[in-house]
Image (cartoon, rainbow, N blue to C red; front, side, top):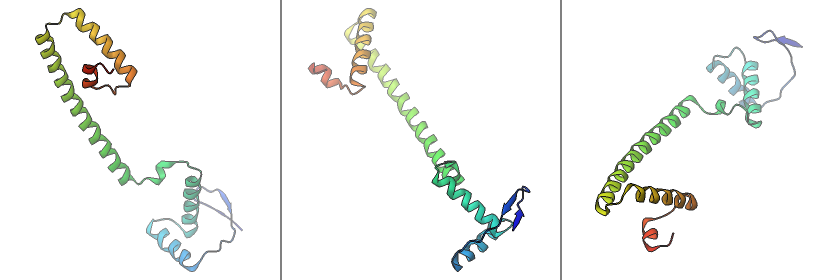
Length: 138
């Protein structure tokens, strides 16, 4: 037997064996979800499960609420990191002024130290410590 769906596509009808509780779940859920029939629910469930198994359309597996919570957490983290980086930049700038005034370095000396600092940070991937530099362990 063949029937047409909402898109007027012809579909074959074949028997499916399910437990009584599964049929009851189908009947309850298709009505709750506002679907047109038990068949519509089963087709949607099959499409969802096949996409899940094939790893497609991952967005279908994340509820809008969960997506909203995750987005808010990411946004909050970005804001917190931005504020912390700004505070660090201000303190770094203040320290640079203090050291420059206290040691009376000239522009050329500061630029030479900047070049050395860039090289050291690249070589150590940013894991250099000030006390290592003072001990000469860098």
